[in-house]
Each structure stands twice: as structure tokens, then as C-alpha cells.
Image (cartoon, rainbow, N blue to C red; front, side, top):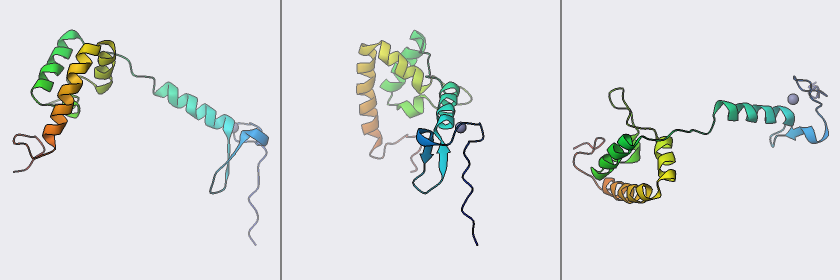
Length: 127
Ligand SMILES: [Zn+2]
């Protein structure tokens, strides 16, 4: 005979497993909401909002890469152990420089469009 799972009245951290503090999974099983909040807080602490921006010099290099038909994925990719910039730095820079962002977005849209058909010289394309 299968015994019904013992329902604990406290979670492993000692929170009361009752009332509003109980989260019930759709597939059954219970979880402690207080612990879920803790996990969430820990996650946010481990993954802070990414700050940092690009220097004017890096911004200029990104812009010329865009003018050469590069996409953001390729600009932010590590090449021979070096990386021009990170996506979040680019985005932070764009947020602070609307005019730069406008031009960059136009180029990005164009470059993405260019990649759709087979483009000679595209790194991923096989001929
Ligand atoms: Zn708990």
C-alpha cells in the first residue's frame, strides 16, 4: 500500500508550510513561497543589471564595423581571444547616445537584411 506523502508543516529552512506561504505546483507537490523569494533575490544578486558602456574609441570601431556590414552578434563575438565590446555595453551606450543609436540601428537593420540571402564572404556561408 502506498502511503500518502508525508506533508511537512515546515520547509527545510523552517518556514511555516501553510496558507499563503504554500505554492502548489500544477503537477502536484508543494513549495515554500518564502524560499522561492529567497532564490529569486539570490538570483538577482548573482545577476546584477549589467552596467558599463563603450569608450568613444570602441564606439567608433563598432560604428565602422557596422558600416562594413557586421551584425551585433558578430561584433560582440570573441575573435582570437579579444572582444570589441559586449552587447550590454553597446546597448547602454546607445541608450545614452540617441543619435548614435539611430544610425547604428539603421545599419544593423540593413546588415541583417543583407545576411538573409546568401552573401559572399559571410563567415558562416559555405560555397
Ligand atoms: Zn522556506
